[in-house]
Each structure stands twice: as C-alpha cells, then as structure tokens.
Length: 68
Image: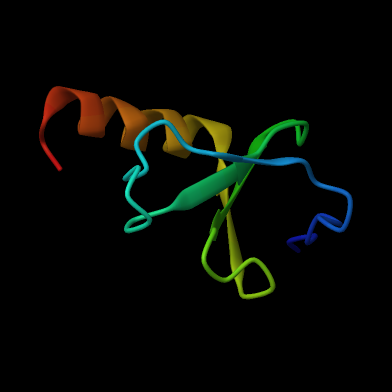
C-alpha cells in the first residue's frame, strides 16, 4: 500500500536543472524522508509526482552524465 504524503505545507524550490527563462521549470520539495516530490512550477495546483530518493539520485546522476 502506498501512502500519499501531505504536501500542503511543502516548501517548494526550483530545481537547479530548470531552465531560467520560464520554460522547463521543475520544483522539488525537501523534508520528506525517502521521497522527492516534484511538480511543474507553471502549474503549482496541478499534479505532483513523488519519487523514491534513490531513484531521484539516479535520475540526477544520469542528467549530470549526459545520458538523458
């Protein structure tokens, strides 16, 4: 069973890989052990994805390595 975290008080920050000109804006929220909540900053009331910390780290590493 998966439990959805309560993100109503989440402190969102723009991810360092987001485009600075208003294009590809991804925000993440810290403070959720084991999870990395992600949303589109242009649609803050829209859907949110939550990735496991290990999977998020793999994703970021793939970005840094240029494989994505």
